[in-house]
Length: 415
Image (cartoon, rainbow, N blue to C red):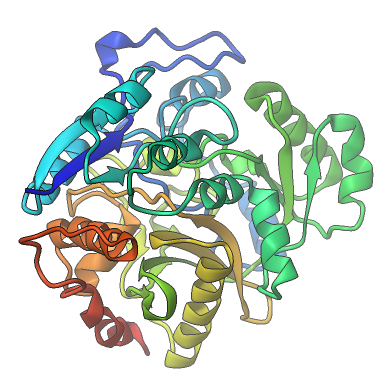
């Protein structure tokens, strides 16, 4: 029987975590709901004057918002997976072989060497450093053990938002103009050539870490204040990016090479956000306002768009997937510019995969819209990886039985 290693990082239980840190600290308090999904930050199609005016509306009440200290404290483990997600992945994989859990802690290299599974199913995000998502795949390569998903280079590249955009630009794939700021003294020169409004975010984070309504900057003074805040609290460079006024989508991809398929496109519905909130998929929107007892109707899948726009979005999505070297699966965030042209915002080669259909998790939602259940989604990822590397899964189902049906189903969202 095939032995499958499951590599993951599990969120600490609330009892394992300290209380929220003082202002500027980054401890975890464990009270956030479901922070292991990684959808993109979003903007709805609005005019600039409308967005500026909206800043003056009544904002969500204090009890529904995170303070600055709580924001920084609570997102420490936002990228890691919950016990529920890990168990669901294990259950899906167990139909294809014997699953051995390999939590990506300090002893992971030795446990991997001793276990030597036939293939590793990797959902480990890592913790330390700008190459943290590459740690597990790199160790697998060191021991010559096959694994799912993208290689260490692609994982490190895509976690660096600027290097990703540089690669996209080199290959002629549209992405918003940007600058990188390492220290506040460099901001003026770096951003002088960019047009307001601008959006700022930490360079090496996911899961909306560090993203609030304040990140959308309409004037230079606001830009300076928010950039300085991010530099001080996230201890890394800041990406300064031109805001695009069009609608936004997130696109799930399954497969490899010429057979890679875009699943039904997820459109964003920012009218579901609380009154006064800007159209941004912020940390508040993801983990404070979107509650199990009162979920946000934030995703529309399949997105109700024309066939022409769908084809255009799918084209830039697949172009980005291929030039960045993504494999097996990924999620790519796309936004329209003022002329309706799709631009790539970010590429996530290690996407969130919450199992509960009630949760706002983009890749499983897109898969369900394509007729692919959660277990089949997980299994297909493993099968694509196994086929790439010549790993015999034995009694597995036919590869892509669900994924191959996605193109026809994706068209069902066309207007």
